[in-house]
Length: 456
Image 1 (cartoon, rainbow, N blue to C red):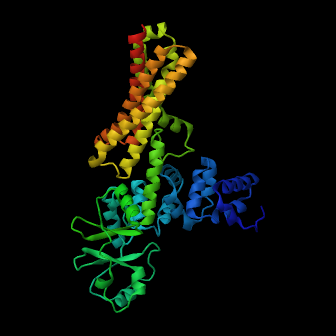
Image 2: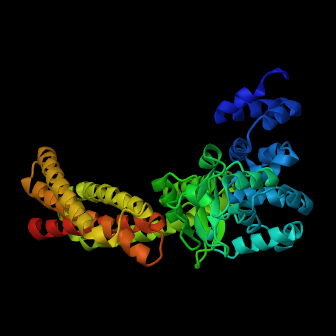
């Protein structure tokens, strides 16, 4: 690749960028590597860093321009960010925080060593110190923890012309600003003045007559998931955050909400495998093995429980060997059916669609679905069993066992997330393990128990 080539074209695909970068690294052309890295957006650089093994990652990190380091660090997952910060000196870390929005800075300093955090705080103005402390006082996954305390507010009794002059005096405002907020003399939130209205209405008109009083305010203690739901349902770009007295204390913008949605999606997917969305894909072997060993151990314990159930029917299995051949069919059908209900319930809870008012209806529906599928597939499996093994008795037994297991799987898939939520356990993390245990145990008991009852 010639030095004069338009390297920014390589940023169109992550795989292409990674390939070009490695080609340049193998040829030892640091100049080409530096040009490639500088052509990327900070978020693209972060994706690139997360796609590299530790040694190559540090090499690329050294090529990131100083002005971009803070933006890149904010885009990285927690573990990769921590490893890069460990490789930086304190002065470099403090310099990387310059210009960060206070809500981003609050997330950033929470992961720094105490000594470095104090250096960062000392570098702030007195006003920003107070604002940063106010954000740090709230839980990270709440509206208060998400908000940016820097807001623009105006009074309702002034004209639009006065507001325009005020904004010009302020100079640059955030690119994410789509409205200024209207407050009374005590700072209580009254409504929002959208910039589209501000620039299109008569300058002599009053703020009170132009503002939008239907723009909702978000309580400081609302969960991050509920905030994301409000933004989605109302197509918000920004929203004010208020304290218990209704006083304006900050704002949340769409970029913060997108981060919440992305983190939640990653969490839901990886938690089902016992993994963490902040884990480094290229972490050392021992560390990765230790993390995964925990859930392998849990799974092993549940497997032994299922094996213990099977051992109870050892005599039956010796007499009717075909039961041992067909056991996995019963357990597998229950596991798949249950996981479908479990996934729907976890998603419904996350999106706020499952409530106490509709839980009973959902339970009846899922049981009905389980019963219908149980009967249909029980007939199919019974026919196949009779065709292969020539025994209608075993076909009837496996049909009954599958029907029972699919009914129990539907109930378990419905109930497990609700119970775990009440116990403050993440159903995405542990739900599948519990469900698998239930469907395996019930499936084996139903199938082998019926076999012992009617075939021995």
